[in-house]
Structure formats: C-alpha cells, structure tokens
Length: 231
Image (cartoon, rainbow, N blue to C red; front, side, top):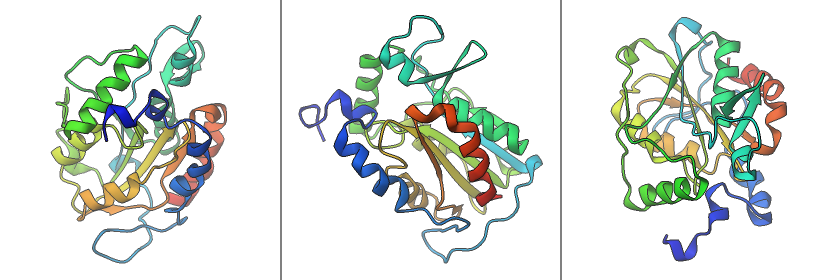
C-alpha cells in the first residue's frame, strides 16, 4: 500500500471506521486460557516462572517532557509521578512488576525521531520496504527464558518492523509467547496470527492483551485481570 492510499490518521489506526473494527481486530482471536500454534492444537500454558520469564517491548514516546505536550505527544505517552513513559513501556513495566519478570527494551541502532510526522513516515517506509531495522542490542541468555511477553504499539495496522527483527534474531523454539499491544483504535490488528505464523515452533497464546491509548489510566487494573488468564 502506498502513501496515496494511507493517511497520517492510519498510523495509529484512528477514526470511526477503525474504532468500529477494533472489536473484530482486537477480539476475534481471543480465547481466554487458550494457546495456539500454527502446526498444533491449543493447549493450556504452563504457570509463569518469574525466573524464566522475559518482558521484551518496543516503545517510542514522542517526548520526555511532561509539560506542554502536543496532542500527538500526549497520545504516545503516559505520565507516572512526573516521568514520561511510552504507552507500551508503561504496560511492560506493569507486567514486569506483577510477574517479577525481567524487562528488555527493544531499541534500534538508528535514533528514531520524536516528531510525529517524521516517525510515522519512517515507520511506513520500513513497512513498505519490508525492512528489518538493526537493533541496538541482543539478549545473550535468551535460551534461558521459557515465557516471553512481547509488546509493541500498532503502527499502520501492523506491528513495528523492529519487532520482526527481534522475532527473527532469536530462537523461540519451545517457548510460550504472550503478546500485548497499545493502539489508537485497532486492537491486536491481526498480529497474533502474524506472530504465530512467524514462530511455528513456539506456543503463541491467542489471548494477547490490548489497550487503547485513551484508556491508559485503567491499564494497571486491566493488566492485572488479564494476567490471571495467562498465568
């Protein structure tokens, strides 16, 4: 899809049509307590062992200044005790606190712009070129984890391309993968299916967590309730 058929409102999946579709995109794959793989039947996940659990996330807040935010900056962030966090970063921290898991921030070698227009243009160019942005660091002991939570915002109706890099650079064979997203109206946006296809040797749980940027104030309670279904 080209720039001529996408608008800046598509970047975070806004608009009445997208919001109406969120119930389909965000809920059609849900099956509380279920898990699925591309090649096998659903089976119940193992209990989460915090010593062998990782929360990996990609998040790009468009400012680090809590004062005088623009609408775009406010949409991409959540402020906690005066500190600006990206929406996905905030959810990742809640999951980490409640599970005792280790956190790993997925970052690109390229310094990403904070300007909204420049960031969305870069994200779209990555997607159209099917690019795999280089990551700043790797997890050396990835084999030690049994369960991996993976979080990201929905950009242009998809997961950001650095997530593709992360998935392809690591061996997920035998691991339980649990997804969580933040969005502007498009829920999980089919990314559970995408990740399931990319990781045929892993168990990708179907009941990924998703929350709108407009509901970040409710994130702690919603994450708490969701975790009961995956642990």
